Length: 111
Length: 175
Image (tube, rainbow over all chains, first blue to last red; front, side, top):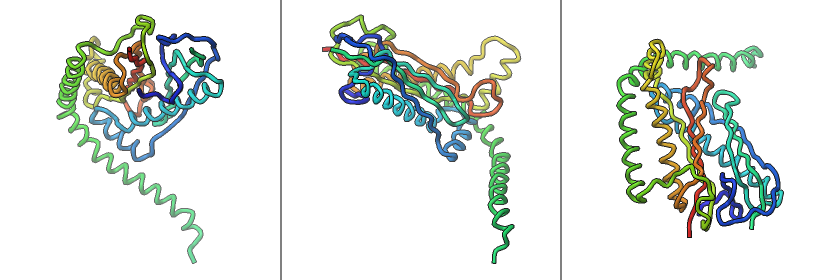
């Protein structure tokens, strides 16, 4: 099984099947703002004229989401949690070519 | 001895020159790219949809069911393990599609070509989520959410015209 960090269960459901939540440790979150270098921006601009997938931006958002999730999990670990439930994502475009990604959820202790 | 004015104006002129060269290339290149998109973008989109259908059929026939659902986690309690799965795509219409869309906008009613682009992006994100989930070893993905965001706000005149579809859910492995 592929987990974000070993030993921490991250899910976007309110409960975890087969586990009991014993303690609520509050909302945890992580965010990041990233951008691609100018060359990739220019290439994406050209690709946009002919349409189709903009791979550079798919990559950018994928990396950013991984980083935001990693920070969220680090926050949860600092609180002594062993799971994060009900995770959600928010995206905002700060400026052209840069994206802010935010991941948040509730840190809990499970048994 | 180098004149002081050269040190000040040299880099500025260089930057201005690069901008000018880029502007000229864009002025020549853009009509060609637009022509290219008018000739091939419709066909490329159809090809992509066809390939996507094949991948979907391969996944579904292998499993005999769709692993994605929007059900909550409680419907089966005996899960052995669970974790987050996600996949995304940034997909845009070509400028030719945008022009047809703009013409359709004048008449009003259904704009099929833009619907086709967004629907393809969504289907692709879901298929990637299926493939990611199976690659990670999950049997089923519960509570699937599909988020759509614009790369450039619609209120802005210029910029990348594309939608970002982000699909995520909770992967579950039973027994």
